[in-house]
Length: 398
Image 1 (cartoon, rainbow, N blue to C red):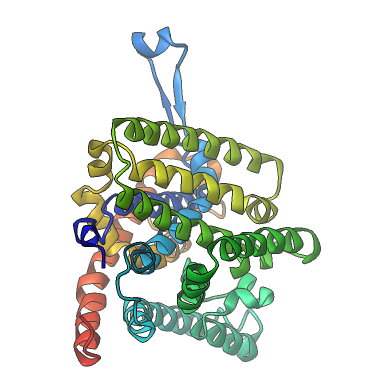
Image 2 (image 1 turned 180 degrees about the horizontal axis):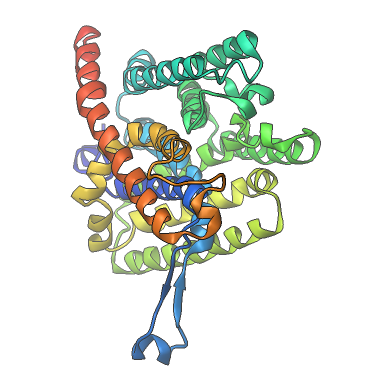
């Protein structure tokens, strides 16, 4: 084992910031779907007017915030592939597959099953399943979610009562299962492995976009994220290889910042293109370019100046990451529940956001964020962590 490997971190703090910001952006999009609040700020000061800037409008970034899921998939790939990358680069012991599966299961399954159980029970009690195909559809919905395969069944995926962001968890679980095998393939044939993954992602995306009938049922099919996962694996290898070679200096830091800026500009350009196509078609066709720009941003961040990396690794982002799993799987369901139950109160048949009632929208938005954060904190520290400690002790996992 290389002695220098001990000096290189096993957890990259800056990735916490990327994950936190991505989750917040996805959540902002889901809340925006309900409140229609445009993130517009009028800038009325001498400095900005001098440069011709009179407003700040990030509506495009928020409106297409669902694309931030790509960042979550990539960060997941980076974090989970790191031990394998260390083994390849530094000669450390190859990670144990059974241990990896156990750790992932303990982290993911308990909170996921709790969410599925609550949503399914709610659907049965409220009569939602009776209005969507009855018992047969209820069984399909439940089984597809218990097996993490709802995206394999377009008719179920589109009409699922067990909804929210659970499909993302399902995609990640599929890649958790595949990762040990992908890592072995990468160790033997890195170029071929990356090429195949990227090809699978792009080809499946194009096929589903143009030949799958209704793209809304397949826009988040697992194969279309293969290129995103390949990008995450490459980030690990580039990062650790550069660390081992000791190539970091002020010039690489400057280059890192420039790459970050360029990636943000490219990302915004890709988001602008979503105005020209339907959402599912845009997702399928733009998924890989989006993944590339996000990957470049992450790479730039990892080689940027230390203050920037420390900002992305600050304690606020770290705390968001701690509660992020429960926040992610519950925030959309909470937003829809509150609006459907007229919280805050509103009268008539037309929702206030559709009538331009900004006061109601702001109240609603505040309640959603506060409720989602509160629920996430309670579930994380009152359920997820105690269960995780118990199962880890039971399975003798450190």
